[in-house]
Image (cartoon, rainbow, N blue to C red; front, top):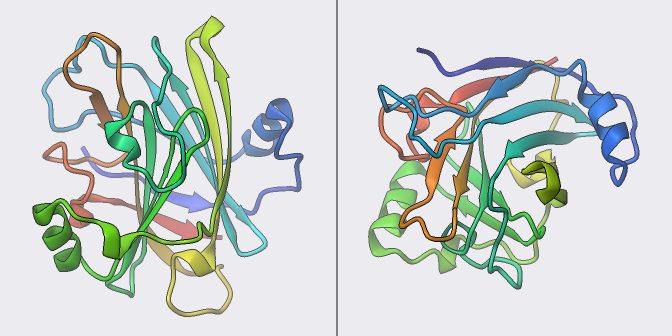
Length: 219
């Protein structure tokens, strides 16, 4: 099993608040699925998720559709620990030629979290101490929209991430490559632990395993 390599296409303009328009814009974008590659079998409560990725105007565009039997988050303001407060989408991005990487999180109620790690070593230290104050980005530099649809047991998220929020340099995106990984925390009330899944072929349920991430090629 390998992590995905995605040729990230330029998307047409679309109305970001219009879910059918978003779906049409992403219809031809390559898709990958969320999985539990570190397990021999999926957990019984695993719910599928699909990711589509494109770009336009120096901005990465990510559209995620998640099945979810119990959609909720207790988050009430930006830059809370969304992964501890309920359902959360997590997007990790790193240009292949730089050590620093960024993490963007979105909850179903569209609360957001943004972190930037100077290197894998810096991230390991922050995680060991369980303190991320130095990695938080204020104010947030990305935007998102969510659609919560409990009637069909699903929620969707559109995340727009300026390239300047991720890379240290500048220049045109076509021809560049980024490492990426997209995961989720799927909580169900009454269940002790969330079900986690990820787009990458991770050998452990750890989203920060940079060497196992997929690759985005901007075309």
